Length: 135
Image: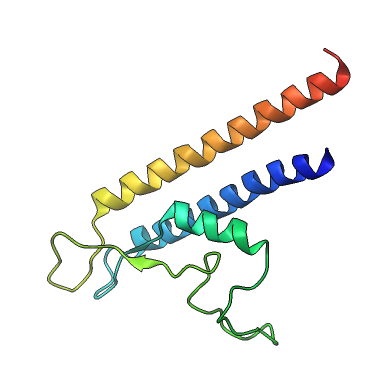
């Protein structure tokens, strides 16, 4: 019984973690909207989540071990998946590929999905507590 509960919570924990990492990536794109030659990056949420769930916290194959806290992180910092450069419909003269409309939409969509996940988790925990308390 406890292993099922752990698996259930681990899924939601991983999903929220990946959403949080994606939010940071999208915020970075927005913050660098005026940086010359900056290339907008994003991840495929479902592939990163799938990879994170299947690695079970183990280091993905091909990554180097960090033996010192001052070592830089590798490019595969999102559950073993490298963030991809976003395809650009129309580039800027300075080489920047950030489209603020796309970034704002993706940022808002990811935020809403994050909040919805939290709401679902809270409701399920309340239901479990009600069942345990016999209400």
